[in-house]
Image 1 (tube, helix red, strand yellow):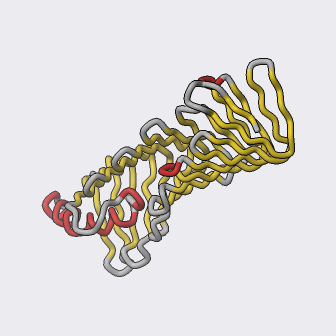
Image 2 (cartoon, one colour; image 1 turned 90 degrees about the vertical axis):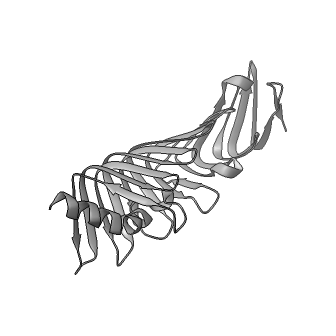
Image 3 (cartoon, one colour; image 1 turned 180 degrees about the vertical axis):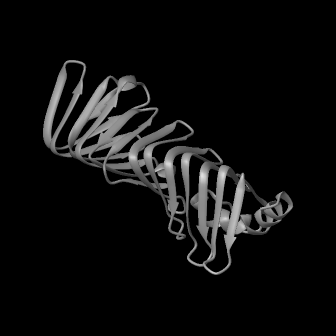
Length: 227
């Protein structure tokens, strides 16, 4: 494809491609968009747009880069593959593949790592819903961390904007700053308050507590208050 045609096609279709492939990271409609890649192809019959080689998509505050990208303008489904880097405002995520179903939902797979301000998350698979207070779902488990410590479980869901996380299955919170650990079958963390249920336990220094339900409040002066 000639360079002039590639640039024209990229400019004409980048808004559509970003709406799908960049998925949740795409900004509101009407913002300037651009697409750069080594090659861009568009099949009018199927509605499929394919970009390959050094793909970089921009729209408003959103940036998505990868080795290849594809978007179906008819179904609004898309993906970006290969050393994916996605950035939107203060959210940054890296993974092997980023897939959109066109419904403000994105699934990242393959060594997923994300950061937002002082919060971080990682796992093999992360589903992300930015319109739901930055809701994350890690069905296969993962790690969440913030200023209070590190939270792990067999299954994790969380709302980053609300600082609310729920872990199910071998839930475990380690807080070096508070010199405390909390565990249980399930754990609900909301802005410094941890509620562990089912074989719940907490350790601070040489003190150990066990209960069916245990509430730990991580206060501002570095202590852990247990109920």
